[in-house]
Length: 112
Image: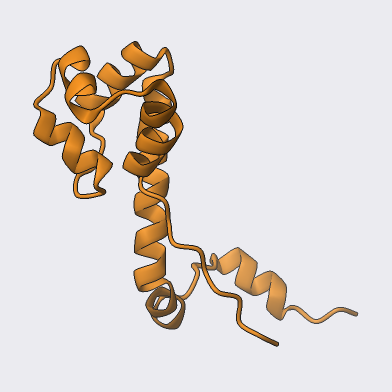
């Protein structure tokens, strides 16, 4: 069976740029001024060099009329995907799922 090529995780900054800033014709400078943060913060997020933290999530949600959870979920989902791509094989090889004694006893009992 062919191994499927994994898609690269999408950074929240790319979503912010492509789905909101471009259609609204807003620059990083304009967004930074409107949400009262340094332009460097916005630029780093748009370039995938920085994460969206709680402060920025609150500001973006207020400006774009979304929820802060929307932005935080985008960020945490991205981080989980990146980390899974990095260590999934190691985890599968080194960490065995916990099985309680009662589960083990049930699985070792013979069926009569």
